[in-house]
Length: 405
Ligand SMILES: Cc1ncc(COP(=O)(O)O)c(C=O)c1O
Image 1 (cartoon, rainbow, N blue to C red):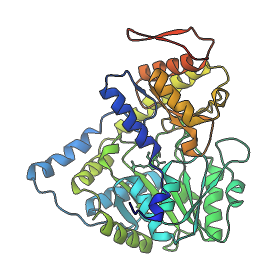
Image 2: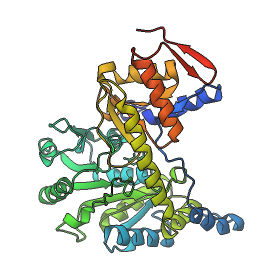
Image 3: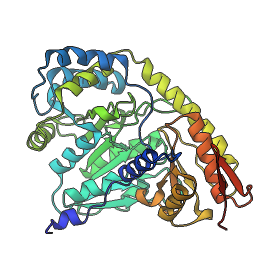
Image 4: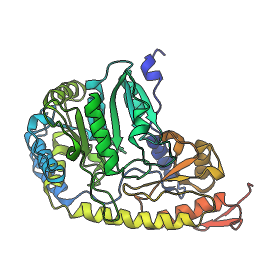
């Protein structure tokens, strides 16, 4: 079959593939523990549900403006004012089908073939593929000091004449690291000086721990005019536990926002009007669900870190936010794909291989599930890998006997 050269360069989303594998195993009755997930398990805020009922009952769900309804834009403007202390116009705002589409249309709007986009490693699995979808080149910047906290110098070294944009995701998927204020200030200043686009992927914005407060990139921007190349992406998926609603947004200069709207108009005609209603409900409604999700995740993080401490040789950086822990399992195998497959096959625990995020020897472990799942999952992983643990393990009334060395 003839498929395009570009399509042939793309890899399937590893996280989606694993979700599929976990559901197939579950459907077969296997006692799967999913530590590979990327979505909170709490319910969507009540205000999100309530605000859709009128439209549902009317049975009139129609096309909306491609860049979002006026009410959706108003909600995004309100969010930007409240959480970024910045007042923007409706023409600076586009609602999209998830933060993913916001990043995708932004990249389509700014990139020419062969131009380069730089992002720190480890990185979210979709960035390289999204850049490739624009026939552009992804360039990764691994922190030289071996931490998950990049410095401007790590990025600066990768900048060349083809560099068009930088993507920063903090708090970060997969590490949970929240980059320092100094780093964000440096990157904002650098992009302004070098006239580069800066995409701030803030999708985990308020899911941060230990009393931290979100870092606001606008605080460091000198140019907030319509020439600014700063693009801020956010959405309801993670902080409001509304992944399936598929509503995100971007805030950018007017001309860029207009172009993103034109692209989106031809791609999808814009996000669903019904789901925009739900997102408006979440943003404008009672915010207690965000606080309670944040507190649950912080507690889950502590439990996961405590459980991992019992492991010989595993190196862990305590996550500052999100619901991911990116742990160094290299003492148990350098090939993270093989290690993740082994854990699914032997003890039915799903993890995501570090290779998918640009770092071998690591596994991404999610703590967005229940405490029991976290504890049992880590117990099973330890049993499978640590040969000093007893040779038998019970999963329910099923007895597993370790027959590997
Ligand atoms: C870093 C990052 N950016 C963007 C997204 C996409 O968010 P959405 O579900 O709103 O498209 C994700 C989802 O996992 C993510 O981890």
